[in-house]
Image 1 (cartoon, rainbow, N blue to C red):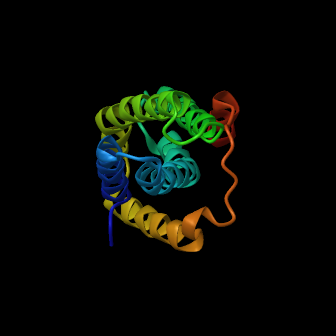
Image 2 (cartoon, rainbow, N blue to C red; image 1 turned 90 degrees about the vertical axis):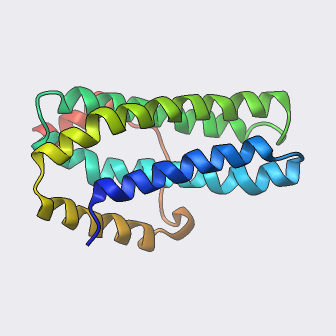
Length: 167
């Protein structure tokens, strides 16, 4: 079975490819064809991490797990906010590009932090069996929510989130 951290890294690679494809989009139709699925994937991914990975990181991570989780939730909120902002503007407009680039910057920062801090921390402290079990949950989450069906993409209060999983 797949390790959750490997599945998360697969998503991260897809995000990087998606933003690179957006660099090559030359008209609003191409931009829409790349951005809309990418934005949706970013939102689904954040929700999956918040439901599956971060609760376990908070329970089983090292001494930095709380700070890593707080930072991740804040990052997810910033990415969601930039995606929401992009939807307020015509695709290809300066305002739209500004929002998309904000999402990209926040996502790039988040991926680096997660790959250098949160995921190594989790791999160090979680058993192979747990990582495989969570990998199965990750795959089931995506299967159960095709195209985000049934999910509500809303910002979360980072402190309340961490508190809920550390009590």
